[in-house]
Length: 399
Image (cartoon, rainbow, N blue to C red; front, side, top):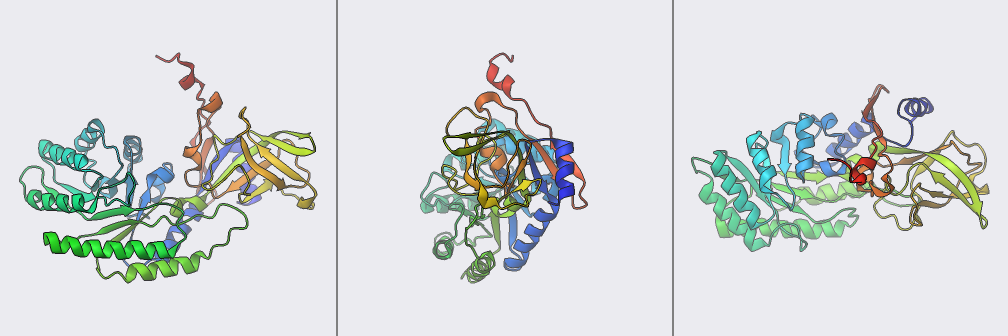
């Protein structure tokens, strides 16, 4: 962000504020498209950033939705339901009925368990709708099902695909095993395992797998000093993907891999002090608003900058950046070198476009939720959310 944009954001939105930039986001998606094998689909995991779906409707092939709330958000934003992947380990009957009644089941529905599958089959028959179901294969966690259960559900889909009322079609296999995965060896093992599993499905059921939806968990670099050659990583991953024995359509599902770099978080210095020889700056935000994956007791320095810019030598002073919460744990950064830090200065935290705005303990101490802004390619600022008071949620006085 240039200095004019920062000034305009502060005047328009105040602090603290989350900022998402259209130019950075579109460039990121283009980079991924160009790096992945031709024809690879791109699915955006809405949980990473529920604010930006409407702005990438034409850039993403699908949107993975993991909760009723995310489904309502996507509906309200006007996202094409044919691009929905209704996922999540807990599909309650009420929200799924809503999906069937409001035309939100025209995309893909994942089955995370046999019980989920039975619920979807029952509702499809009741509402007379044809659905496309993608069973999820477990990686040994609470997500998905064992291989034998997946194969049995594929057989069931074969029996139900031609049903007159509420046909159930096998849409492919869904697999995801984690996040921030920098190990290409792990990708190699997973893709080889999936290749073998696809062969097994063919042998045991006579069914060809129409598609693989794979969550590779591409990493985002959040902290200074992290060494990661993303170009080489993406090149090797694409080689592994293109080299699969089974040549079937693949959709890559990403959250932080798409959205992290498009976001910044602006927080103002509210107070400064020196206690026992340590410099402390109190910010108008805190750990309830800013969460970085892999941060541990503020020991790592996130990529950030100071506004207004500094000309002096940063090594002269080290500052502990603390939040506004009354807990020792509200420590964002330890010993950050900043020259001549003052009350009113703004810390701009980078790479906050994924999860930061939703993973924090937002209701602790009943402090307001920060504003959220979208910056168009031409520099125009669109305020997506004003700062939101939350004290009413904690008062016990709302009827």
